[in-house]
Amino acid sequence: MVGMSGGVDSSVAAWLLCEQGHEVEGLFMKNWEEDDQEEYCAAAIDLEDARQVCEGIGIRLHTVNFSSEYWDRVFQYFLKEYRAGRTPNPDIVCNREIKFRAFLDHALELDTDYIATGHYARCETGPSEPCLRKAHDKLKDQSYFLHTLEQDQLQKSLFPLGDIDKSKVREIARAQAFKVHDKKDSTGICFIGERKFRDFLKRYLPAKPGPIVSTDGEHLGTHEGAMFYTIGQRQGLGIGGRAHLPEGAWYVADKDIPSNTLYVVQGKQHPALLHSRVVVQTVHWIAGSPPADTNSLVAKIRYRQADQRCSVRPCDGGGCEASFAEPQWAVAPGQSIVFYRQDQCLGGGIITGREA
Image (cartoon, rainbow, N blue to C red):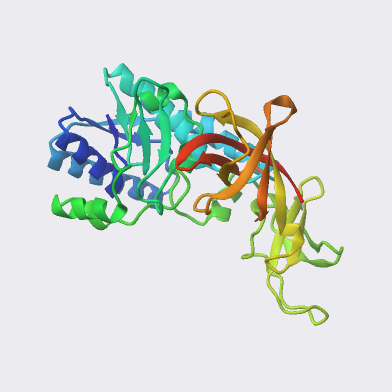
């Protein structure tokens, strides 16, 4: 059962599995109840695209509504984290709770052996535990978003695009005359789509203006709500030039949610934006336990970041602390840190603190 999004990646994933001789069916998941006509039309277009691809391949397309599960398991967490002043990554939670739990459970009820998605990642299974690895196309690798998966989920999952480049995926789609061969990749929130993010958040988290203050204590302006900003953010601060200060961009360095204060610094390499140690909670190791040697790992504190050398040591309460060889820029509590050894994704957790 292939999760069909109406995009080029899942379309080619389904075609590749058919070519490999698998008995394939598709499933289109509706995971958000649209509340305006524009959103409804976008979802309807995705469904029609998925239907056309499945008809062209000659496979059945199922549809299912997981909007209730998404609201309870993903979106409520998303709002809770923002209220607390953290910056969550809903795509990671969506993969864990919807694509590889609700979807997997539904597919198994339909007597499916495996689920498949258009993620760019590789999963190796065999006599030993399953191993999640980076995709062949390092620019598209999505293992970062899959680090919370359990071994039983990986054993039932296939990633047909793990060994090919994105350019090859579009080439296959074009050769098969899929209408979606040149469809733009989705860059919005998982299943919510592309929209003005802060305007969307304001529907659920009312704006609460407060002071923008420099780390020296100078009042520089007013923000719309400290929860709407993330560490390292430059755009949308509305801080103009100051005659008594040198020219230079301002960046969010910290947030105080109880006082609703946004702290900013001038200059991208300001020391307040650089941290060498990161405190991590809700740690998940794909193998079920940390590797024997955690002194020579690499990690990412955000998607598309280059691998960063680090060592990891356990902390009280089940968390850990990651110490980096080089200071990390704009460490944002609420974001995920993901650990690797070479191209193997070992697991990760949620950043809860940072230290110089």
